[in-house]
Image: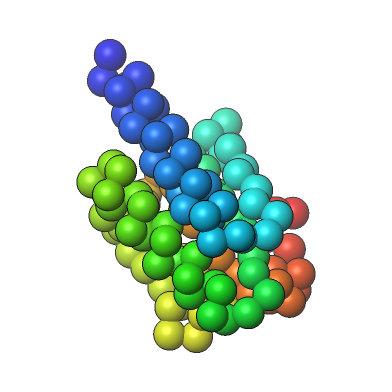
Length: 111
């Protein structure tokens, strides 16, 4: 039962991350299920991009606010907000990547 509850919480968190991205018009939102990969750092990666640093920051703010409001979950770690080129939000089971479009193209994280 405990494992199912954690899975349900992870899916709710994932849903709220994607909703926050959609609210700020994030581009090419991709959710990668990593749960079948041995020793994966998270169960899911959620990746999106935006054409400007301003929009990258707005997506970050919306995801943070929406997840906190809807689930009560705070991130374990956050990085990259100062530059707003690649922001990472680590919710342990769900890791969020918000890229500036050309930075996403360069790193090809989905591959």
